[in-house]
Structures are given as C-alpha cells and as structure tokens.
Image (cartoon, rainbow, N blue to C red; front, side, top):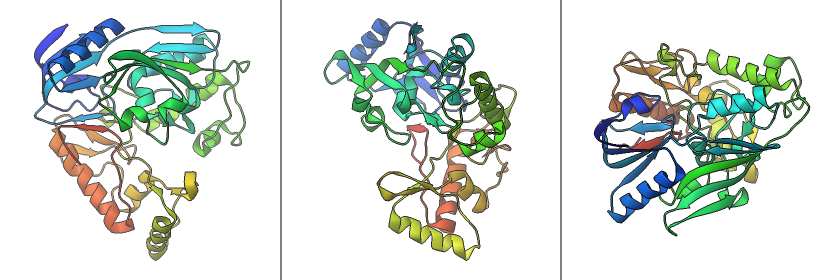
Length: 348
C-alpha cells in the first residue's frame, strides 16, 4: 500500500513528527525488498519504520520514502524461534513464555516495537539483551543487492549497538532467529539486582518463568514503560539516554565531581576496563526529577530516563528538553549523555 503526504506521528510511540512524502506499507519479505530496490534505483531517501518506538522524527517530516514493515511470522522448531521483522516484540515474548514455556527473552517483556528492530539496537533490559539469544539475522543487503544471513558474531553486538546501527543504510532486517531454552519452566538466571529484589531471590538464581515475565511487566508498568494510550507517561521512546560507559580517566574525573557533592554514584564493570554508570541517576542528581518540565514535553512522572509528550508537544519541544537535560548533566558531572532513539531530520 502506498500513501502520499502520510502522517507519521501516529506510527510512533512519541506521537511526534511531520508527514512522509511517500509511505509504503509492506506485508511480505518480497514487498519489503521490492520497495527498497525501487527507492534505491530512484535515488530516493529511505527510512525503514517498524514499531516506531525508538524514533524521533522532525516536525518537517521525511522528504523521501518511509517503508513501514508490517510482515508477520512466528515459527518455532523446538527451542529455535524465527520472527518476521514486523512481529510485535512484546506479543512474541509473551507467546514464548506463556504458550511455549521457553526462556531466553523473558526479561525483555513489555518492550514496545517490532522484532526486526531488536538486533539493530541490541535491545536489552533487566540484565538481558537480544545478543545473548540471537543466532542469525536475515536481511536485505542494499550494497550487494541480495538477501543475506548474518550470524551472531557477524552482527557485531555491543551495548545498545550492532553492525546494523553502525551502517544504517546497508541492511534491512527481514527476519530474526533466536536460540531459546527449555529449562523445565524456569527462567534464565536473574541478572539484574532490581529484578532479584522484586522477586525476593538472589542474583544468579532461576525463578518460575511465568513469574519472571510477570515481574518485568510490573516493573516496567510502574515506570510507564508499557504502552498505554491513556497514560501520557508512556508517550515516550522509552529510555531517552543510554547509560554512559566511561574510560578510566573519565571515571576518575567523574568520581571527583561526585565526591564534591558528597554522593555515591552507581558503577558497573564494562568491557576494556571501562565503567558504566546510570543515566537515570545522573539526570536526577543534576536536578531533573520525575515530572520535570512545565511545557508540552516533560520527563515522565514515573521515570527520569523517559522524555514524554503530554499530548500537544512538537519534536522541537522534546528536543529542547533533551538538550537542557544533557547540558545540565554535563555541567554537573562532566559526563556527556547520548541519545538512544534514532533521530530523523533532527539532531540533539
């Protein structure tokens, strides 16, 4: 289906952004590939849209073709799962847990968006990320002009990053394959401290799979991170900033500023001798508490990492708030926050 001058805001969880010059909705892999090839042959700018949950589109909209991937497909072969890129991620996670009793993505419950977006961002939450279970990604390689399958290693996953994100104009994800686990009704080990406390267990323990799934949904709902059209705290792109990962030198400078305020900052070991700290903590301690803001875009009243549209915000309203928070954190702690959502036609 092709629409001209089509509104994009209703297709995003932030409900922001101007129209697409041309919107193509594809319901099969062949339609996806055909639409990409047509745009590429015409030299047309192309934006691939899934669930719209990790996207900030500028108020001017998009001047080229927006390809909305609406493919469906949920296929299980034992514990091996293949999802079409257009499958609703949260629904797919629920099916693996409640209908099939399979572990591996249970702590990723309730995350909005489509399955095809998960390897791009290396989606993660509550101590789990898709890099731990993805076995392959079937994608259209625009450079080679053919459909290819990338192994887990070839995806080059890292924290909220991947080969697909590093080279966003090359691959269009068609299907994602996961290796899940039949643990006899138990979850994978609980890796996140908050989840362990909520479940009343120690980190590293396995729990009832269904209870793990339900616990994550409760935690996310309490932070406004499960979509609800009636709750403006969920009119967001989820966590707007990634957790900073600091080098040894950056971390030492950061600790000095923290000590001046007589605070203790969260710290987690990261690869290559670096240290990860909490973006939510930084935002709060820099003076931006829950609900901060008096305009049409504010911080969520439930979670400082979510920037929200209170119903009448523009993309520029949201970005003005994001810049204020980024600059305030930098001034207070010397740490540069980086946006997690993809920016289209705008810059932070």
